[in-house]
Length: 141
Image (tube, rainbow, N blue to C red):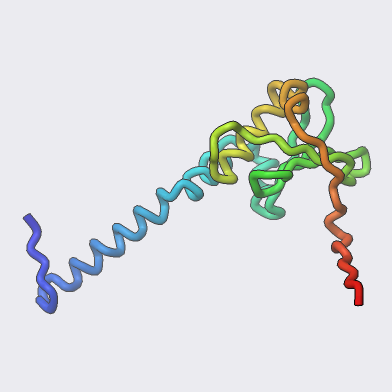
């Protein structure tokens, strides 16, 4: 087969090349990387541009034509926006299986664009904190 010996000057470059190829292959095939790649393939060009620039993308619900913003993450990452693009209601819904963030976001996108009513019927509501206002923590002394 292959004969790689430590310190053999003829094969040391080959061994480094094989190790680099292995690291590259395993890095590109981690679940997080594959999920992000699949998500980007399913996004429209406008959504992909928004996602690459901001880390989130907007979708339009199929039933109500409401605008939802899906942020990077897998829990409490969907926010319904009002007419002024201000967060109105937060929605938390995830697949039953434990998935990486990119796969969860893709499932949320498909659910809102194809069966909005059913997705929201299962979702938990939460009050979104505006991103521009940091949370204030007060300490009692």
